[in-house]
Image 1 (tube, rainbow, N blue to C red):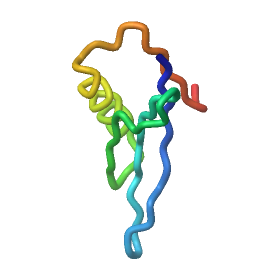
Image 2: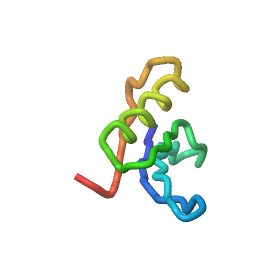
Image 3: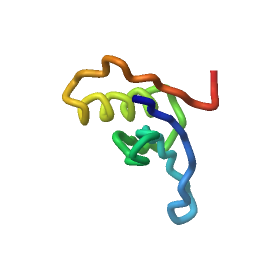
Image 4: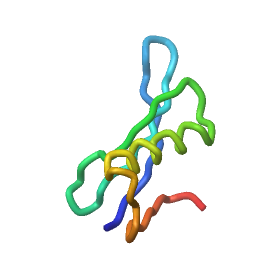
Length: 69
């Protein structure tokens, strides 16, 4: 199973929110996401934790990819 991660900003009035999401590449389903006012490591960690919870806590065999190192 392969997951892909991405972060984007979403305009909200005159401000912006950051959205981190984890997508199952095979099904193209969003399996975890998180939103915050600032782009910080916790944003990505929360999205990954949500994805792990979606899988019932088991991530054996999952490969995670993103465009950042």
